[in-house]
Length: 78
Image 1 (cartoon, rainbow, N blue to C red):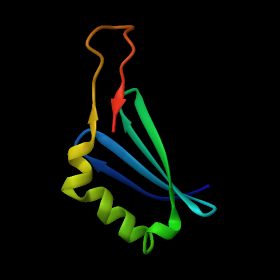
Image 2: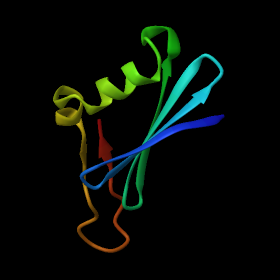
Image 3: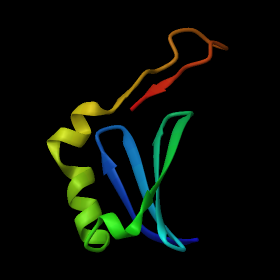
Image 4: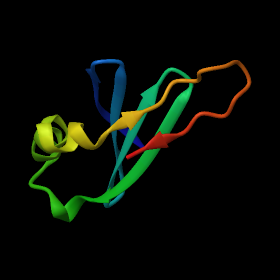
């Protein structure tokens, strides 16, 4: 797996990896993370993927909750 790029949007770290015929997108916020695998053929290169990640439509769908009390399990909704 090869690292393509790391983006920071607000408190969210977004890492894009190249893995065979897939892009692996990892969203991290504090101790929470969510990973997606996307088919490379759906995009015109990693720049196209980055533009779609940066679009307001995609970012408006991202909500990561923070723990409200210690030892509670938090969740990520995408």
